[in-house]
Image (cartoon, rainbow, N blue to C red; front, side, top):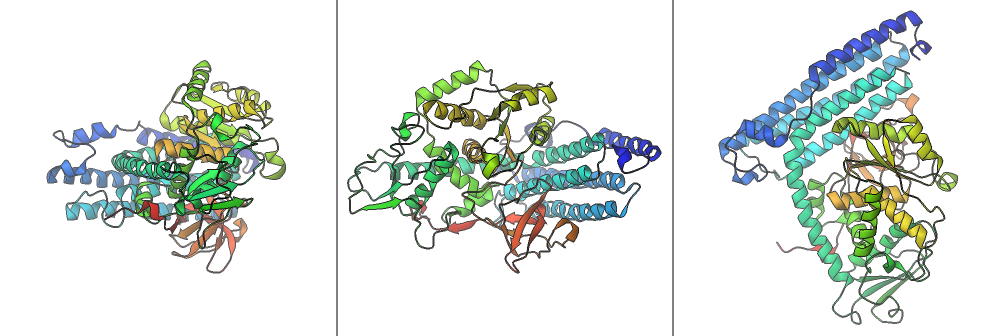
Length: 571
């Protein structure tokens, strides 16, 4: 209630004042996203190609670059108007507490404003050089634009958390969400062309990597092939099992060895992996234990000396980084996608299940893991936390008929969702929560498969299934960074610590358990409580070993690289 922090009389004025600001902002800046193709044809009616920049005349190139630069300038102006409204709301009847929050948000606004300026300068330089090359020798257009798209999301979460802490009314939340959606749509208009080029580049790269994996896993002569035999037993769930397989797959691929994974006696299927899935290798998994060319792994994974298993291949690292917003997730997705090649008859069965429950796109997905997960590994998250992101996604897409596919191990969740969100259509399939036997395997894979077909998914990143879905979404779309949202941990792999680099200075605010960082310092992400959904993340500063929170919009992922000779491409 508003009256919890100001008097009742002032509360009425505050709500009226806030509503007026919202009305002005929405009236002035509302509108659906403009179709990028139509926009380009408006700018250059004679344009021959909408995606192949090398087929454009110089005049066409300059016109389009000018449009992009002017659009960025308008975006920056609109963002300033949005910030003025937010700061006016927060500072109205300001207390010391509010002033502190407003100061923190002002700092964030300054960072984002500088980002917009950098993008404007990026296009200005292109105009001056009369070049619209996708890659300018340092960064691709996609890299520049996708980073600010990410920064914008984290700043939105920062604002939303402050609005929630201050107990501001629901119309203020709606105002903030609408402002974010508008800014995001404007940015997506500009990024669409470079996104198309990046997708084509990643499509070609994925094909290349898949060919290398398939050739190595299926040698011409199994008897003479160098193999990496894994006898690693995992009695956890399906997602954990699949990620454990990758702890063998990755080092095998690095060493150019065929990975043989012993699966006999698997808790889901005593016959092994190939009941529902294509074999991991054509080579018989039983015949290599005594061969001289066999590398045997029992129990824990064994990595080559100096190998960092959260690295991406140096041979293709720049291709990934410049064309994908989450490079390491894309790399892991290559092996997940190969391992989860399902048998055609099972795919047909899954598609019949989808038809039976009337699963059609556009659709959002939600995976809510409770059960034993809450005992050992994760905290409980209420359905409202998932729906916060799902509602925002539907609002962004301007979809009225809202359907959500729900998977959960808690029978009460479905009833809770239908009660609290009666305007939504929730779909589900029966789930065997025993986590053993073929019925359980069928149920889990059905959930994972259908979630991977959703347009947007909210789940808990602490769950292996949630991260597996993200990997499959990435495999399907090449970049799923805007299609997936965790409500707890960020994406990680086997609890590894990921390196980041500070791209802006940050001064600590002790009351929020923050730490100071300087631009260029290397930061390590702390998985435990690392992602509290307020735009900040818990990190360790490697420069001084301090631990605390830093805004995510002041950081960039800094992927580790390692050589994978099999991926070497002749110049």
